[in-house]
Image (cartoon, rainbow, N blue to C red; front, side, top):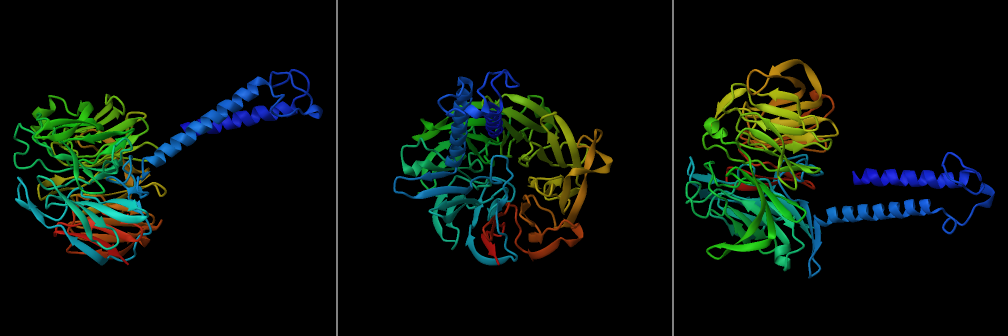
Amino acid sequence: MKRALVIFLVVVSFFITSCEFKCKERINSCGLIYLTEKKKPNRDSNKPQIFLAFERFNLDMTEKFNKFEKQKEDESKITLSDGKEIELEIPTFLGNEKRSLNGIGPVPKKLNIAWKVQLGCGHTNAKGGTWCGSGWTGQTAVVLEDGYPYLIQSGYDWHLRKIDGETGEVIWKYQFDDVIKSSPSIIINRKAKTDEEKVLIVSGSRAGYRGSSGGGPNPSLRGISYLTGREIWRFSMDRTDSYSRDCDSSALMIDGLIYIALENGYMVILDPNDLEEKFKGFKSPRVVKSQILYYPEDRAKHGGNLVTEASVARYKDSLFIASGSGHVWQLDQKTLEPIWDFYIGSDLDGTTVVSDDGFVYVAVEKQYIAGHGGVFKLNPETKSVEWFFPTGNRNFASWQGGVIGSVSLHQEKKLAAFTAIDGNLYIVHTDILDTEKVPGPDGKTYYSKPRVFWSKNVGGAIATPIFVGDHLISAGYGGVYLFSLDDDPQKIKQLDHKPGIGCESTPIVYKGKIFVGSRDGNFYCFKD
């Protein structure tokens, strides 16, 4: 919006300045009296005040725009007191505020294992007891230190790790109180007093052994120094109607404040610079605002499954979040007041993904609904549904069907990719509709359906596939797949496949390497 305003003012200023020299000494189309062209004055000294005012306004707006652009850049870069430059390359789950950045190419053509880090296993209060490797969503964050890449990776062994992105060497480990499912977010906090606190990792875990059922403190969300791995603060969420006090969501940093969804069913804004002593000597950030993401009547339909596991997305002044209570919320960024509540009714796990033109893509699990799960494309501008793509039902582990992960967008090709519990990896057109209409999740409301571009059975997955350039990478229970894309779906090629590396985590591409954690206990780096 600001860029458009600046361009408009530049055009207006140019038009009026041109008028100044084309008009004769009379009242003309400009509505003002001018000297003739033969008596061109000094452009600064004899210019009418209205033009000088326009030029000053134009200059002021340009300076403000440049300041805004610099501020945006400053959110991802900082120079510390020792001269070290830190740059956030892939700082959060699915890369950016819209959750639409899947990596930075080039993409390798093979899945050769360059190195792997043993993440190990950890016990948790859940079915299965001991979990290994990394899980859902478990995506890697990438940070540059003086141009050198480091990774932040969560694990089921209760530890968060900083890893050398070239060698796989573990720089430090930080231990939580339970397994970590979430993807870490890295933020720059310029108001922090020390370098140690200026680059902060915000990450959550499962609830710990006193867990969700206990009424006492449950600090499953932590702020950890990126540089040293030392804990800066911890945050305990309140007990609510939701049965969980885990934190699987990934945070966003907006205007110096932390935005994150919690599994107790709340969306909160935290101030990392206003820490209070809360319990047992631990510091905790102040809650600036909070918003409940379910209604009392949702409890009758979902019981205690009112959790929010998805990560919040931002587009302009709106936030988008899918809740396990069955609602997709559009919230005002500053107040968290609801703008739009699109009710689906299912458990919604996947993170909302927003395209550059403002459409919202929502994954739908098959649970609590009569119809199928699948994917919605929503239009927040008109508060309407563009299309719904249903996926097949299948009893797999504890799921019945639908899509658990998120949607990946290839915006240049106008394609969307997702993996479903039915075993398939789908690519659909985002802007081309099929001729048939299909029933939605309620089994009775009919919607337009997008045309399928390509699909392949990959054994099922809950991770999000990722488009990077002309490639698609999918990680799931059938292993890791690498595909090259083509405008002709018949020419899409499978470049490589690593079976036996079952994944629930979403992979990431970074400059010739693919990073992903597996349920086999390891974190992998693949390259040519």
